[in-house]
Every structure is written in C-alpha cells, then in structure tokens.
Image 1 (spheres, protein in one colour):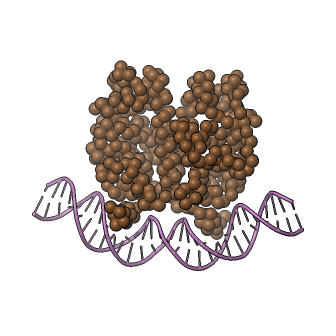
Image 2: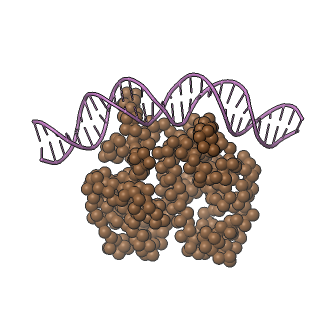
Image 3: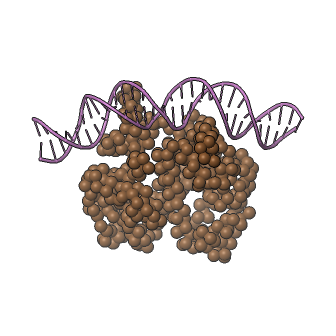
Length: 194
Length: 194
DNA sequence: GCGTTACATTGACCTAGGATAAGAAAGGAG
DNA sequence: CTCCTTTCTTATCCTAGGTCAATGTAACGC
C-alpha cells in the first residue's frame, strides 16, 4: 500500500531506492470508506495524508453550518491541515473520504528523518511549500476578480478528471457558490458552445 | 538603513550578532517615493523586500483593468512575489510604495548564505512559509464564507494601524469590494454601534 | 489665495448569485 | 425490481453588492 508514495519520493524528492525503502519501512497506511472522516475540525492534525488511491476533500464549516471545500486530494496528492500540524493548533478543517481511499500516514517524525537522510528532501519540502503558496495565491486572485463562470472554467481546466468524480455540489462549494448557481452556469455554457 | 532588519534577524531567526553582521554586510537598501513601483507585473521578481520604514502594497490587475490588493507591507514585513522569485516566472503582481518607503533588498543568494551560516535560518524560513500559508488559507476562508461587513471587521482587527494609513479604496480592493460598498458598510457600522 | 487632483460619500438603479421550493433523475440497499 | 436517499435541475423571488453619476471634501502644487 506504499507503491505510489515510494515512486513519488524517488521521482519528486530525488531519493535513492535504498533511501526510500529505509524511510518508508516504518510507515503506516490506512483505508477509509467513502464518507469516513480522517480529521474532524477542532482536533489537532497529526498527519499529512498521502493519497495512494481514492479521493479526499478538506473543508471548513462556517458559523451558519455551511461547508466550504478547501482542497480535493486525488491519487498522489498530500492532504493535511498544514497549519494545525506545524503549529500544533486546533484544526479549522475536516478531512473526509469522498471515495473509498487508501492513504499513507506521515507524521512530524517522518519529515525529520527524511531531512536527516538526504538534504535533498529539505529542498523538496521547501518546493512543496512554495508550490502550495502559489496555488493559494492563485485561488485568492480568482475569488477576488472572477465570476462564477470563469472560476468554474478554471476548475475544469485544472482538474478535468475531478469534474467527473466529484458531486457537483462539492465543486460548487469549492468555487464559493451554491449548487443551484453552478447548475445555471453549466446550462449557460452548454447553450453557448458545446 | 538596516537596523530593523538586523534586529529582526536576531529576534526572529535566532542569529547571533556576529552572524547578522556578516550576513548583512553586503546587503543593499533602497528608498522609494510614494507611488513608485518596486516591481511591475510581468517582470521576474528578483528580490524579497524587507520594509525598514514606510508601507508597500502588492496587487494584481485583472483583464478588466481592475486592481486587487494582495498584501500590505508595513514596517518589518516582507513583500515579494514568492512564486516569481522562487520559480523564476513572470510575476502576476506589481509592488508599489504607498508611502515613502525604505527597503532592504534580499536576493536568492542571501537566502543561500543565511542557510549556510546557520541552519536555524532554514527552520526560520520554513516557519515563515508555513505562516504565509496559514495566512492565505484564512483569507480564502473569509472570501468563501464571510460578508463584506465581516471581512472589513476582520481587517480592522488584524491591521488596526493600517486602517488609518491606507486609503479606503485600497482596503476595499483588499476585501474584494468596491469603495462605494465599503463606504456603505462603514456607514451601517457607525449607525449601529460606535 | 486658487485650481487641480485624489478620495469619500450618497443616491438611483441594476445584476449576479443566494434562498426557497418542487420536480426529475440517478444510485444504492434490500 | 422497488424503495429511498442523494444529487441535479428549474422556476420564482430576493438581496448583497456592483455600476454610474453627482456632489462633497481634503490635500497639494503653484
């Protein structure tokens, strides 16, 4: 249940076969059924989840009880509440399995060991953080400047596969609009071109 | 023109007096007049600017020519387009001096030298990145879930001093609303409590 | 001082998207 | 196959906030 993660470490973090094996020897993997929670808002997030197979989503719940999807995590993605894990704060997020999902559990100790084994991992980690920032920044930009339609088009361009795997109301929630609005947007798009 | 930055390094990055002096010996500082640009969108961002004195803003310009403030940078803040600097891409941002401003210029070489001199700096850098992520995440959450009024209240709670130093239309732009709307929000708030 | 430019407020109107409600369609569980 | 739940669509109405335009006001150069 670690194959994808091991391949990922070799390719992206530039670790050798031996380093990967030694690092991942003690890792735990877990399966979650569709609808199960990996983390509840308010708990401290002790793990970063690497998705071997399946699909996760992280989301917040506002005062009115409405959910807002923060991130989708398909195969080979990391899902976590970074702030909670790093600063040991209560998490704002919940994390739920959208499909039956197999994940690898990475704790703080794993990060330490990885950095000790090969300093390339530290570089890789910084790159991942920078990439995360770039992604969040882009999303803020869209929320500030784009209409619902533009945001949806951007979404399907960025995550074409997810458009099929994820219920529309979750996509609407990610975009910051209601499912009804998304339905209207899609109708308009269908009418005009495709 | 490096006093604040040197003090910052000692306190936040836990560097010794000697390390700070050696690191900062070759740094350049520059002054910009109110309204001057430190970076134009489309250029590659070669520096992170540490604000010694004054106030910067970074912003994007959308297809319709509207500006959207991404960040304000008062004294002791870093302002940069991290993505552009790190990935050597054209910047989405422009950076402008809101007041007459003195900055310290930090380039990629500075980061390297700092990490070599003391590994505590690497830790500090990671912390700064994590903090940035936390901040962006919180903003996305607000944009997804909060009304203009709530976002404004959050802003004045977070940046009470900026409320006075920054023109209202820039605050409106940061919040993702028009100056007219912000004016109405303020009127409502004034009527109800204060 | 005066004129100019930038900023803030106000009012009248408009629109994107939210709220509510009610079908239609599509999965699962039995 | 049938029932039930979840998801998606559609229609009607509503509201937060945008747009446009006028007026007010403060700040600065000259």
